[in-house]
Amino acid sequence: MADSDKKEVETAIEKKVDIEADIIGPIDPAQERIILRKIDIRIIPWMLVMYLLSFLDRVNIGNARILGSNAQGVGTMEIDLHLTGSQYNWALSTFFIGYIIFEVPSNLLLKKLKPSRWLARIMFTWGIIATSMGFVQNWGGLMAVRTLLGIAEAGLLPGLIFYSSFWYRRHELAQRQSLFFAGASASGACAGLIAYGINNMNGAGGWPAWRWVFILEGIPTILFGASLWFFLPDFPGNAPFLTEEERKIATDRLALDHIDANDTSFSLSEFLETLIDPGVWMLMFMYAGMATSAYSVSYFLPSIIRGMGYSAAAAQAMVVPPFFCGAVFTVVSGYVTDRLKERSGAVIVSSVIACASFFGLAYGPVTNNGLRYFLCITGTTCSFSPAIPLLAWSSNNNRIGTATRQATASAMVIAFGNIGGIIAGQIYRTSDAPQYQLGHIVVGSGWVMVLVLAITLRIAYTMINANKDKIHGKLTAEDVSDVGRSRTDMITSFKDKRFRYQL
Image (cartoon, rainbow, N blue to C red; front, side, top):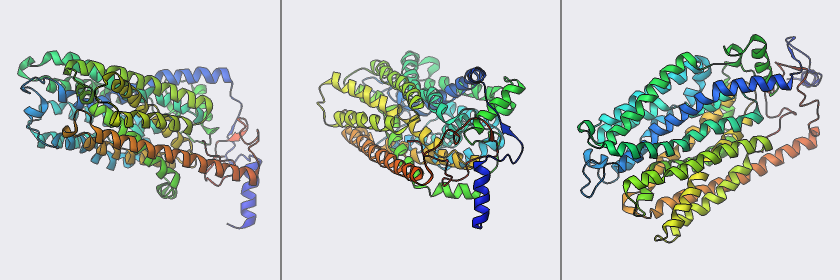
């Protein structure tokens, strides 16, 4: 492009020339709050239940593993399926192979095929497969079903992250996403309570309790997934619970963040640029460290607590407080980081506490159950609470151009991060019980990686922002004005002088 053409484009942006005669006027704050409340009521509960059920069906194998156990091991999953050596661990890890492969394509299809259709498909199919785990007869069957479960469930979390961006502005995302992401840690608490009750069903219908776990927890997923097809709203522009005026305001709100809520296009150039973005890759490795920790406690916390000398029933009940704390602090971290409009701080603080917790479990006194249980609580809490600030950090800094960049970045971070699930399935070995030192060391080392990368990326983004301020000057009130902006006046490049990375 010639210099004269570049100058004309920049002048058009600065004067906010309206290309499509579709200027966004002032939005009444009171009316915006009413619309936002309506969206919260209609969107958040669906996402919360979806993610709670997904994590429940994914990790309930950890609860099923210790159900029905007695001195002879009769009625346990490992005895009934003739599992030996590391076969249980591989059954955990195989889930993530298809899950990782299909994350990115799933996210790219979400907006094209409509969220209500695509998310319903994901949930309905994984519900059927999750229920069928109660009928497997050997290790081969367990491996096959776990692999299919990963393929079916692929795309749910990045899909929910992407879907929430259709409805909320940058500074509103983390606290909303934290509400449904709390379902991950809440599922651990629910799984413990449900398994505690199902333990009394051992032998009901001639079946061991562990089979009932998969059957009774899989059926609600099937029913809920079918309901999404009919009741989940797709976009603000066609939301049936909003009036025509409210739909326009809901769409205009997103345009203030340079986002077109109705855009369903695919940009190959943005897709390729995102694939080689070093910031996205650093976030991918950070999420991998977090996911290793989250899946480790989700799969093995019942076994870790039982290794302290408690009964199977007591261990199921004792997993509730750690996961409950994780759910509470997930919501708190989302709220605080939205209020402060800052993401990296929560990641850095949580990383420090998590490092201390898991290295404490690895090297602390084995006989001090009080201390070990406290470290289980802090470690579990920090395994979940910084995930949404990190995912919001990724989402906020890739909300430019078409929907392609944000969809790709979110899916890349989550897909790669789920390599942590493969790692988690292998590091807590039966031979290492009851201290599981190797597993704790690996998880603690992952948090060291998260800490170093978070500090590095924050420094890099700070330097880039400072350099832009030096060249173009700090952003003025006019640059961020909510009034008079064209819906076509979108930031399409990181080089745009109005773009600043969120820290």
